[in-house]
Image 1 (cartoon, rainbow, N blue to C red):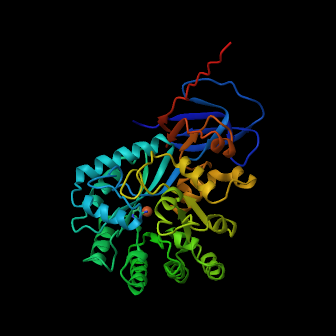
Image 2 (image 1 turned 30 degrees about the vertical axis):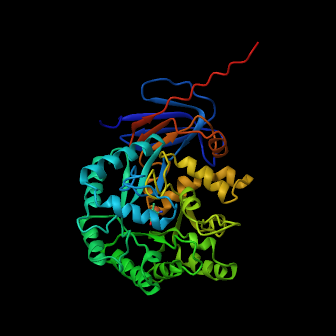
Image 3 (image 1 turned 180 degrees about the vertical axis):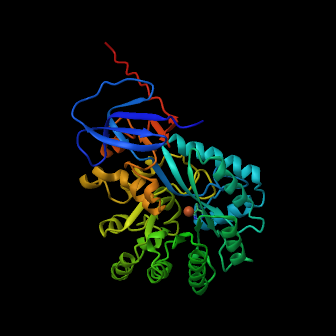
Length: 421
Ligand code: 17E
Ligand code: FE2
C-alpha cells in the first residue's frame, strides 16, 4: 500500500509546546507544522482530528532480543531466575531453532511492538551459532517489515567472542552479512583479560565496517565488573561515543560512590549512550542477595542528571530470561520510573523522553526521527494530552502513522460503570 499523497493532523497538542498545532504531510514527509489560534473543524478523508490530545514521534524499542521471543519454558523453565541460567536454557533452545521458527516468533513480537506505537526497534541477535540461523532469519525479516518498522540488527555474541569457538570469525561474518550494530558481552567472557580484549576487538570491527556499537556491559551484580570504563575509554579515544551504547550496566548499581564519581568523568567525556531494561534487571539481578536486596539497575537518574543520554527498553518478551511481556514499552517506563525513584514532578512532565527522543538518540536515528519539517511523516496519537497523563492513566497510542500511512489503530477501551440506584 502506498502512502497517502496528502494528510493533515489538526488540533494536536505537541510535547514541550503550549496551544494547538496542525501538521501537514505530503508524500510521506512532514511539510508544515503550524500553531492554530482556534480549534479547527475541518473534516475530510485526509484530515485526522487529534481532538486536543498528544501527537508525538513514534515510540522506540532500543533493546530487545527478537530471536529469543516466545520461547519461555522451551524446553525448560529458568527456575533460578538468574541471567546465567537464562543463557543455559537458551543454549538448549538454540539447538532447535530454524529459520522459519525464528522468523515466525519475531514477526509475532513485531506485531506486538507495532500495536503499542513502536516504529524503531534495535534487536540483538545471537551470533554464537556456527550456522548463524537466527541472523539469516532476522536479515530477511528486516526487509519484510520495513514498511512498519525500522529494524536495526546487533550481532550479539551471547556465549562470548573470546570464550566461544570461532567467536571472532562469527562476529566478522555477521558484519559481512550486513548487521547494523556490533555487540559484545565482556562480563560473560571467562577472564577479565578476555573481557577487555573482546571490547578492543569489537571496537576495531565497528571501525573497520563503519557500524554502530551496543554492548551488553556489566550485566551482573558484581561490583568488580568494570568493562564499562574500557568501552567508554575506547569510545573516547576513537571519538565514536555518540555511536556507542552501553546496555544494562547493572554493576553500576553495586559500584561504590568513590569509583562512580571517577567513572562519571570519563562517561561524560566519552559521550556514549545508555540503555536500562528495568523490568528485566529487577527480575534477573539481586538473585544472590539476602535482605536488603539490590534492585540491580544502573544509576538511571544520576546518568540522566549528569546530562548523559539514557533510555528504557524491554529486553525480552517471554523468553528464558523473562517470562512475561507484551510489547508495551510504556509498561517498562512505568516500572522503570518506580524502581529508579523517578516519580517526582519534573520527571513526570518529561518521562516520555525515556521511550522516545532519548531512545532515538541511542539508535542514532538523526533526521529520520522527530516531528520536524522535512522529516518522515511518522507519528502516534494518544487520547490524553501530556506525558504525565500518559503515564498516570496507563494510556496506549490509539493511532500510528508511518511515512504517511496508517499502520495501527486502537479502539479506546469501553468501560461501563453500573451503580445501584
Ligand atoms: N542475553 C543476555 O545476556 N542478557 C539478557 N538480558 C538477555 C539475553 C535477555
Ligand atoms: Fe539484552
